[in-house]
Every structure is written in C-alpha cells, then in structure tokens.
Image 1: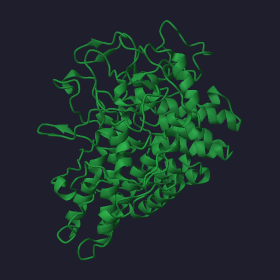
Image 2: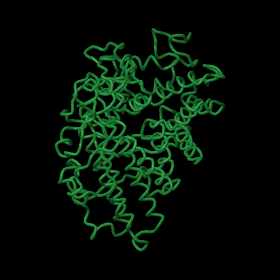
Image 3: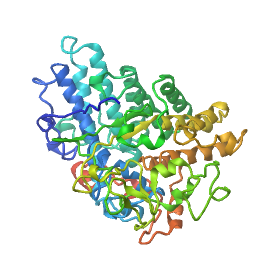
Image 4: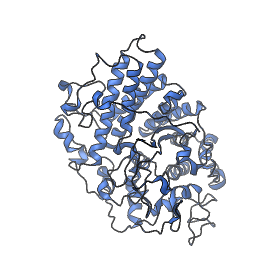
Amino acid sequence: MMKKILIIIIGLPLLFTGCSESFLDRHSLTQLASDNFWQNEKDALLGINGIYDVLQTRQLYSGNLNGEAGIPMYDNFTDNSYNQWKWEGPGNYVEGNVSASTGGMFENFWLANYRGIVRSNQAIANIGKMTAEQIEDAAKNNLLGQALFLRALFYFNLVTYYEDVPLITEPQTLETAQVAKSPKSEVLNHIIADLQQAADFLPITQTADRFGYAAKGAAYGLLTRVFLFDHQWDNAATAAQEVIGLNQYDLSLPYAVQFTEEGENSKDVIFSVRFLEAAGFSTNETFSSTYTAQPKVDKQPMPNLVQDFYCTDGKPITVSDLYNPDNPKENRDPRLLASVWFENDVFITDRGTVFNGNNVTGFGLKKYIRTKNSALGTSTGSAGGQDFYILRYADVLLMRAEALIETNQIGDEVYSLINQVRQRPGVDMPTVQEAEGAGLSQLQLREIVRHERRVELAFEGLRFFDLIRWGTVGEAYDRIVADNLKGYNPRYQNKRSETFPIPLSEMDANKALVQHEAWK
C-alpha cells in the first residue's frame, strides 16, 4: 500500500493573516507580501498547501464528534440519518429552527469556503506571474491546476447550498471589499471554466511527492458533478467519459474495505481529503470517531434508509421471498452490512462491545467509523487518520448513467454502468437485467439509478446534493416524518429546507449583500 504523504502547512498564519475572520472583514484582506514570496517553486508549493489546509476545517471535511457539523454529516439534512445533537446544525435545520442569525455551522461553512477562495485567488494570481526562471512550466501548470480545481470546489460548495453568492476571482483590497452576489448561473459558469482549465493543466497521475494532489480525473469528476447539478446532461455524460477513458480507476477493492484506512489508496478513490494520526502529529480528523458505549449518536441511520436496501435477489424487502423480518440483516445487500450496525452487533471489535440498539433510530453508523478501542484513544472524540472521499469512481459511473438516462440515450451502456457498481467485489448484487429486467423505460431506469446512488453513497455527504438537484427534498421529508422518531419534528419549508441562510455576520460586514429571498 502506498505510504500516505501529508500536505503539511508551516507558518501559514504569517502568510495568510486573519484567515479565521470573515472574508469581507478588513482583517482578512491583507495580502501576501509579493516582494518576498512567490519567488520559486517552494513558495508556490507552500501557497497551494495553504489551500489544501482549508479542506481540513471542521465545517468542511475533518468533521466533529459533538460539534458543529461538516460535510461528512450532511446526510443528516436528509432521510438518510438523524442528528441527535440538534444544535450541531442539521437537526435544528430539519425542524425549521434556524435563521440568518443562527451562527455555528452555517456561518463557519461560509467562512471556510471563502477562506479557501481567498487563498486560491492569491495562488492563481501570483503563480501565474512567475517566470520560467522561477518555476518550470510543467510544475507551474500543475500548481495552477490545483488552485483552479480547489477554487471550483469551494465555489461549488457555496452555490449548492446558498445559491447566489459573491463571485471573487482575484485578490481583494480594502477598496474592493464590498461585493454583491452574482447569480447562481454565473457562478456555475465560472466553476465550469475553472475546472475545464484545471483539466487541461493537471497531469493524469501525480508523482509520489505530490501524492494527495488533484489529478486530471478529479477535475473531470467534479466537472461531471457540476454539469449534473446544472442539468447539462450531455456535458455531464461527456465529462464522466473523460474520467472513464483515463483508465486510472476501477472498483476492484471490496466495498467494506473501501471505507477504512486500508482502502484509502484504492482505484475507486479519485480525490480525497487526506488525514494522518501519528505520534507527535495529527491532522485532527474526527468524522470517523465514535462513542465507545454506543455508535456515533449524532449520525444515526434512519429506518427508511435501512429498509431501502434490497435483498440479495435484487428485490425490495416488501416483495422479496428472502426477507426475514425476525433477522433483517439476513440476505441483504452487503453494502447495508458494511454501512450500518444492527442491534447485537459487536461494534468495538477489540473489546467485544455490543450495540444494544440504545439510540433513537435503533441503528448505528458503521461506514467510515473506527471499530477498535485502541484507535479511539482515551477520548471517544480523539483524532484519527481516515481520509474523506470527495470523488469516487462508483459515483462517476452512476453520474454518467444518470446523464444518459435523462437524455433518453438508453442502451446497453446504461445497464453496464449500473451493473459495474452493483457487482463490485464484496457486493455482487444481481444485475439490472436479472433483478428488474431488460428493455426498461426512462422512468424505470431513473428510479433504479437514484436508488443505486442512495445505497452506494449513503453517509458520504451527497444525499442532500442529490435531493436538491432532483427536486425531491419534500418527498424525503415525508419519509423522515413516516419514521416517527421520538423527539424529532421535521418540518418541510420549501426553499428554507433546500438552502442555507447567508450568515447575519456577513450581511453586517458586507452591505452589498442581499439575503436569499427564502430567508428574508
């Protein structure tokens, strides 16, 4: 297995002063001293590493146990999982108990993404001006590709959940601090342009000393996701095919292994946020941490999701002869058993701790979660070294299938794309033809690919994104209500249940900002 090489940041507070403040606050606008920095490849590398450092923010990808939610907990906004500690963000949001003045994750998610954008803009502007004497062309293009890819990722996070947002593409000064929102369509077009340029710049693979950096497949993979979100189906299908055509990725690793540290370097992983926990050093990842008395209580699998996993004959539990209500684990899609703890399961393996179903939903989160007490340290919320996967090959295959279905380009390839995901090692579920039949309609295949996305990508922070772009958030709330969880009172409020409010602190700092219509 390839050794994990971490992108380590030294002295960043001196280089990016005030980055913990609002991006529109005067304290966050100090610029790198270009007269003594951005002089060579080492400087450029440090600048790019400073952007990568933002990905490890709590409200982005490093996560929390008992703290403000980050993207690893975004399934809690949906019918996939339940947020028992509602103050963390998703629980109160689903119950309709947040506003523009609510701080916490909504404010810090905004700030973290703009912190990444500020650093990306600085890198793009300054690396772009470096001469051939300062940096070789190949290295320059690679690093510019990193900055363009990351800026696109940060902006896509923002436009997905806030819609119209300020579009800032160069280093700011005090005089340019007040920035109005740009339309969602304009921001998406800029994201697409960044990713297309990044795909041109980035190599197909990164060398060992750049391990963890984005490569060409990451740019095309994120471009696929953006096109899909914008309902540009033909472009999404084309971008996904670019990933497939690179011949760099596959689904050869068993599914259950994929979501452990052992699986981090598999060919299913196109781009991930890398974390390390070692003696004397930590990148402070806690999304994989859990309690030792019961599984991670702030992300509990919902009953309706557990019921949605099929039996091993490829049929729903409502019609399959294999379903045994007295033993609901029996004869089920192996992805369920790799993702969810059931009552009486041993969930802390090295000390034999049994989950007794003592939580609200009756199910425990298994996917990504550490299972050994020795890996948990003295605190249940201690830091770990599990990478978080932003893009997987299985996701790209399903996105291409969806794009082809939506344009009614239904043929053997659509079945093959879905079947590759269903029949990966450790899953081996029946093909679409075996379970649902051949010659299916667009509507039937749409439902199949949407179901496949739910069970394949459960708890990976993508369910809310899917529901928003499908326009089915309200239907998801109906399923949450039907689960009838004690003490949970979900309330669907149209756009207020599909967008985040612009934080009041940002409105105060930037008088050019106007609040989203749904949150006025």
